[in-house]
Image (cartoon, rainbow, N blue to C red):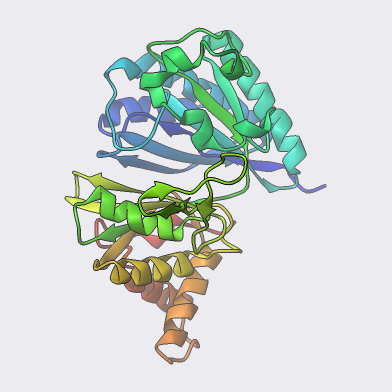
Length: 342
């Protein structure tokens, strides 16, 4: 029987103090049967994305200990950062990797959520495949209003947590736990500092698009619901933001199905739409890990665009992809640390 392996990618609301981040990741590494793959802190977002894998029970044990430590060390009442967030451990998704179904992974997400809610007194919401209500499938819907609006939001019976008491936890906020497919977190760099201009490109790209307007007024359907103009890229979520650390605006994307919209297509489409709006893409940034195959596919794509032979070594294919998408513009890109064989 194939060994069951799941991946966990918790996002912690601390991206500056490496001492705090290290204490959290140390809790993960203490659990036998778990392998820590990546720790990706961001100063401007004040957020760290951690990736680890292992047997399901070991993974949720490690996730619980990390969430517990984050709750002890991070005070959300003092937190500031560019990325939307509502808790010390903002989101904690479980991803089936091998030998396990999504349905089984959902049960582990519920098990983790129940333990966090009951033992740590942190309100927990289930999302994506683990969502108990249709409106809670989308993380952005749950997180709307962020930490600052959560004290009022939790009073609404419609927003009672799935686990834990419906009481605002001022220090830790709330945590969203779920089960989802693998996604790629990917940022595209622009030669502007304007969040508004970055958002204009993000709305062109993301599947959800933008609200349709005529003469500056929103268009409503017969039921009074806003009509949306879909974006160009399926299975892509995107927003624009300004990153003070780098002095640039970025298009921040989640590629939720890289079989439908691969990394290189997201990049090239962003280049085209930025150019159409008078901007230039200067490079890009990968947050967390990327399957090796995705990078090789990108290298092949850019070689073919140059009408060059694809009969090159794997290392050269990766190098072409990195340079073509400017993945090393903001910091060195180490394929050994950023690419996985998943």
